Image 1 (tube, rainbow, N blue to C red):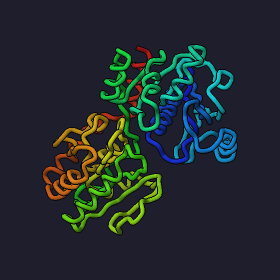
Image 2: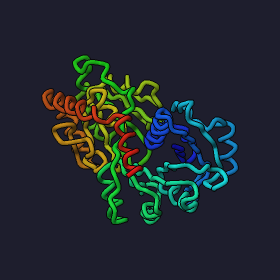
Image 3: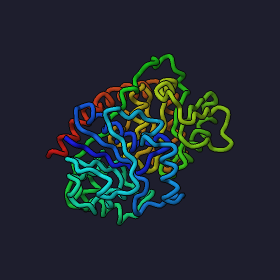
Image 4: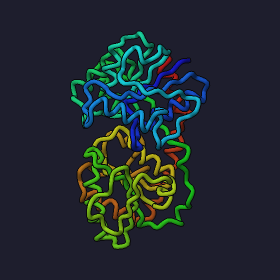
Amino acid sequence: MKVNFIIPNIPGKPTGGYKVMYEYANCFAEHGHDVVLYHVATIEKLKYNIPHWLRMIRTQLFYSDSKPKWFKISDKVKTINIPHIESQYIRTADINMLTQWAEVLEFAKLGDSKGKRVNLIQGYEIWFGDTDDIHNSYKTGTQNIAISSFLADIVEKVTGERPPIVKNSINGIFQLKTPIDKRIPTSVAMLYSELSCKGSTYGLDALKLARKEVPTLQVEMFGTFNPPQDLPEWIHYHKEPKDLCGLYNSVQIYMSPSVNDGWDLPCTEAMKCGCALLCTDIAGHKEYAREGETALLVPAEDANMLAQRLVELINNDTIRNTIIKGGLAETEKYTLETSYNQLIEAIER
């Protein structure tokens, strides 16, 4: 089967939604399919900081092979840079995998001339798109597939049809390596992002409040952005860590203050590595986070409650160990092979 993956530009930094698409591209290729991955320089309706011609020069200078520096694309996947989504640049295939509202709208203009169109919906992308445009992308005749129940609910409300759900997998590199009892109970990890939807400001405030109650609190913070200013010495910042699995394995707790998220990959990655999950009570987290079983949940945008529950998780060994065990059991089912098989079934259905 011929499968095209259409990706908006080449991300210079690790990004969850792109990682999911790259992993699927590799998986399709490993299963014997003919896979071509296209990186598109400019997509209509998206706003860019630099003009198209300059982005093309940048792409050719730094990404002539059309591959990101931070993810290993299989040698079985052919990668191509293209300037726009136009018929002349894209081959006809059995399946065209898309994953962003703007590229779905643009690719739909080609009709069925390039083959079946599939929209893998990984988030309700209102943080960088017009709501009407996002909803219209669900109604282009492209087959919608959602990664979570709450996203399927949104699509069903907009279109009247409920899309199949294919949950995200956890990359096999994430494993429990360091025994839980070898980790310090007051150790916490958190993703830092400048994107407001990730709620990092609430997370930082919560950590500072919790530190007043737990003076031995140590935090391993990571992200693709530069660290925030005036970071306390007890918060260690790791920019684009090369061994994220090792970082997760160095702490007992992972905290996510996200405000809007389709899945939040670091949560399940950390759970798989034996971290107790503390996260906001948002729809994207509820696919795997159940209060008292696999996580402790708090309202979004509430730093005080986040701090209180963090202290509770640190001080109560029974609750923390219960959540760690529940998280490990929960994440056993999120394998790439399972997600791939479900995706194939959804597409064929």
